[in-house]
Length: 249
Length: 225
Image (cartoon, rainbow over all chains, first blue to last red; front, side, top):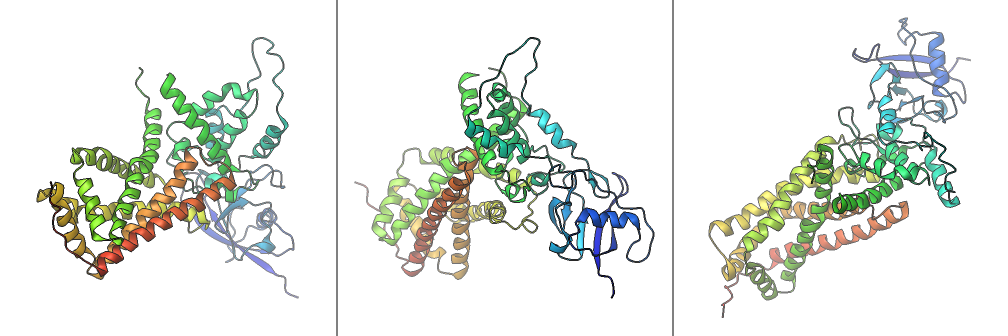
């Protein structure tokens, strides 16, 4: 019996500043295998289809259960996590590319620092530290807790930004993940105290007004976060903030 | 008052881009298509409405301030916005992504169409100085000629469909970005309502084209008393 193999095409790049190139690998087929285990196979014997020995392909991964977001890459043209991409469900040959909206570090690894910088811009946290005891916070209504739970599942993977036609390498668009965080923390009774600062942070270049409502973000979000609802809600909050700013500032 | 920062200006310009698409431009489109569709009822009510419009005091100033300037602003901002985007509907084939791409495409189509449309109607009207009651027979005469070739019909069909689509889809975009429609259901229902508005406007527009094509009736100037 001949062993079944899977062909995997990988878009590779040696350093952040060198051009990318393609290499094709063949790995033995194992049922229920995911992309990560295929990449591990390639790592074991990094030989291309035409017998050339090359450096093993590098990639990022951590939790292997679609919770951390670090193995996000473009698989067969669609952005998703490699850990939950099972080879049996994918069209062959499988094409792997790094995300195109973030700078490539090496091969399938990208630098998603922009996302974390954006979280800082909108103060995506609740301030509880002071020079004195600030006491207990207000109680959160349960329906808000339920709403926030879904939003809080964001793992900063970058799928929504990779698939967003408005988000590019050369602009400063904040993107759906960031707007969702603004809504998440504005809905928190203690977080609400920084509401206006967060809204002001999304009312500028690259802010909420730059969203073109293509709504691909919500389609590709692996955590099924209602991102477009968050965008609509931030739209409403910023509209009131705009009116308030115009009339009171 | 402090001078607005670059970020504030950027935000306000984008908001104004969204707003001008609804008022005055969208409102004008609705009035324009509805008034013109009077042609399907008869030449007389149609001429009467053109007479009424062309006797608006300070018409040129009103047109410049409420149509041409907002339209130019909306167009310039539109090209800027479209230029930022990197459409990816070939990769992510979702209906809303298709509409997003079409919104940018139809915007450009309408822009080109409007250059043609103004060039054949308002342009000659202003050049030949046809004002007040003289405007209606002059314009009706032009429009009678516009739809006698299939090329004319195709140009107007593309222009009308692009404009009504751009308006009704833009109405939805406005409602989402200003936070009027938030929830998934609300956004879907809104889209259905706006699609129907767009459809009605398209039918009215195309009916007018058909009427002009089939019954090109020349008119005399209404006598002012």
